[in-house]
Length: 166
View 1: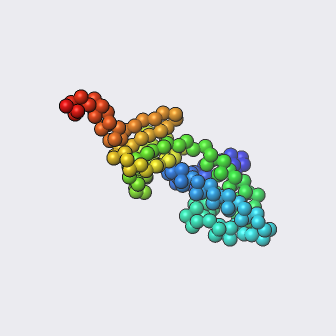
View 2: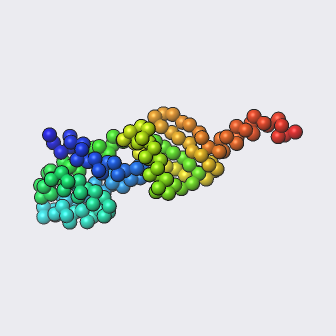
View 3: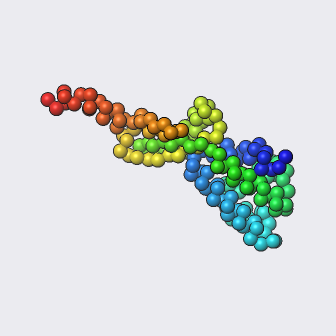
């Protein structure tokens, strides 16, 4: 079995991602790492890891060490990174538009709810729109649902328009 076909070696990295922003960051850092490793023949993997964020470097290094991959084998490392990059493209996105900037614990709680109800393989794309007043707009799998306070108030005003204008 090749490195790229064994999804379990990437498990810890993949399950650490919560948002599309997380995915974009790690994807960009994988590109930088691949470029850095093969820039020169004498570039060590440890030195290349210093070209990316400490957090991503730790996740990648932990996965490599946990799975006993030889870091001096550049082709093996390339296959590992390319396999990871390929898996990053398989996530589905749930878009949330909310009225406030969520804390990291709020993102964690929302993502945990998604995992509990839909399973792994989903990332949140979070947008902030202060005009919503509260609640959320959710877009997923071609469906759009508006659960905002603004929408509820608009519906209330429309249904009570005659009474309000009197």
